[in-house]
Amino acid sequence: MKKLLFIAMLFLSIISCKKNAKVTSEEKNSTEKTIKYPSDVIPFMEEWKILLGDGTKSEDLVGFQKQDFFYVKNDKKTDWVVYKTPNSGITSRTSSNTRTELGQKEHWIPEVGGKLTGTLKVQHVSTTGDATAASSFSVVIGQIHSDEGHENEPLKIYFKKFPGHTKGSVFWNYEINPKGDNIGRFDYSTAVWGHDFSVVGDSANTYPKEPENGVALGEEFSYEVNVYKGIMYLTFKSENHKTIKFTKSLIESEFATRKDIPEQVLKVYANREKGGGVEREIAYAGEINYFKQGAYNQANAKSTKSEVYGGDIAKQYANGSYAEVWFKEATVSAGTPPNID
Image 1 (spheres, one colour):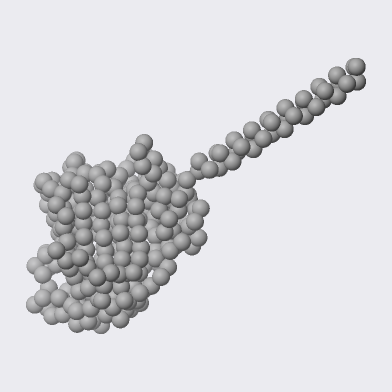
Image 2 (cartoon, rainbow, N blue to C red):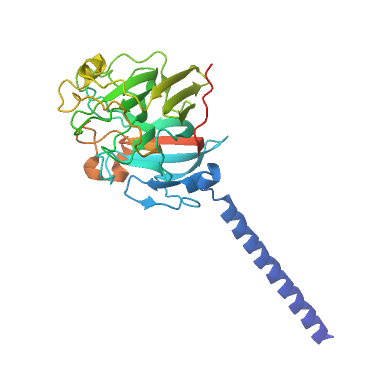
């Protein structure tokens, strides 16, 4: 009897251990399933590579994240992909500005085209900088970038907000593809909501009037960049603003002679070496381009005189010297015939 009782107790003990082991395994699996990667929220990540603000690079973004730079955040309603980068870190060979930004693996020429969309909200831009510098207090949230020739940017979509303002501006810049050397390159800026690139302060510490129709930090909006048969079609939407559309040729220049240089450009580049050039007549025709998306911080210690705390990233994050952009939806695909209202 005692032997049977011992066997029964041993059997129950084994069963109990197995159940506990099973629960532990299930809990572990459950915990693993709760981890969300950017590729779980926006499933186009296999189309991209990334450069982070600390210099980290990756070409395999499925199941990839890095805390403090590229990760998922939930605002109690929605999962968002966070792109965060300091004013000073490690950046690409062609720029002084840090970025946590996707770069499209597939390349295309304007005549073939492509389409990029994004729904986002900007959570933070640098709170330090020189108000007379057009790039201060801003972040680029989407681009078309050339991968040959001068490697200029036919499109940069910006968000910019001056310190003390509630509302910032959304605008887009077109950088010319100059004839000859690249010294005379310039950006021409177009406002979407709020001011364009040329609206700056009268001195380093004075700011222009706050835009009445601007966009606040944390306010959701979206853009669509559709390049089709050499023409770029831009659409910007926001629940609190009128939808705005633009059309711009990437294969026929508007800036091919000196008389074509706009007054805005003469003002912005008056005291700079660059900005006096003209564009080749065919603009970016036949030139290889690709999309970029994320947070390309425009604040730096040199051109915008932004605070960088000796390059210490933790100190920059703690003291407002960073850019942070959240995307909840984005797509990349072939260009499509435009819907012209």
